[in-house]
Image (tube, rainbow, N blue to C red; front, side):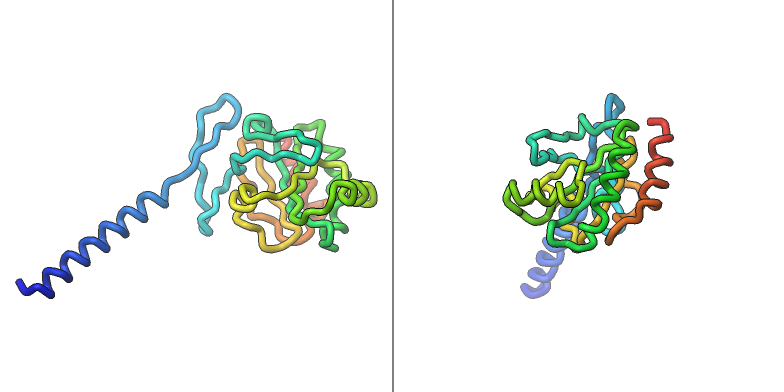
Length: 190
């Protein structure tokens, strides 16, 4: 066998091993624990994103932490927004009314704020737009966990087992669409 052929075989074998390792190491599924049930494997969507509520800490502007354990058994609505976003401004009063109606039924709504206004500016904004649900300032972990939403607003809905319901809603979500989803999810058994 010539030297060129031997180098080609070695190079092809090395590339094959690297491809094999990449496929097997990057294709693993994540797990989360929901309540006292066994951890279940998240289903990977076609875009490679997990269909489960990301297991990260959501800390609101009041300092309250929302963890996978504290959200277990609850319907969770995650809405990415910004103070400068006009469609966000339009949907916030409706989201607040929905949150106020459903929070006693086990629904948690988290507003993940993509911009960074000063605390007093945020308080004024929340007052002006009758915002009643918790606000979480987006950080790197949250951006990565939700695959960097490219449009605002974007809304994710998760059922009581922590699995995402449908696709993320890009653009303002209508109150009737969200309440229909929540009615169905709140009625489901864990």
